Length: 95
Image 1: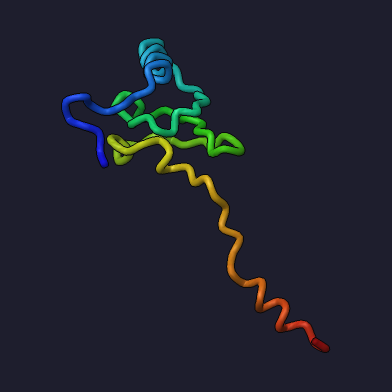
Image 2 (image 1 turned 45 degrees about the vertical axis):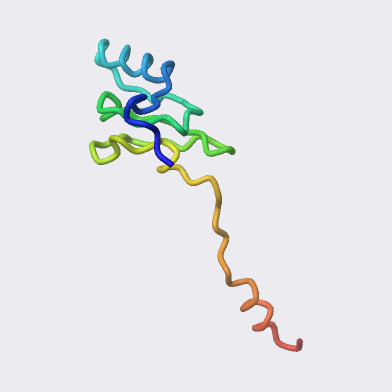
């Protein structure tokens, strides 16, 4: 279910304040954040955000195509290790 139009998009206020302050000073640096549920506004375009995936911070460069999406959509939380383990067991001679 989506958020109501009346409320508007959720944007973490602390993160928004840091980015808007950096925009005023015209500086670019990596900003660490845990706010995966925050929606990306147009002010974030051109900045690099290090989004936490539960284990480490993954740097994400925000482009215009990302506006309106959530930060967590671009940082996967799970690592797929593959399905090939049964092939290795069958290939061992003598078993």
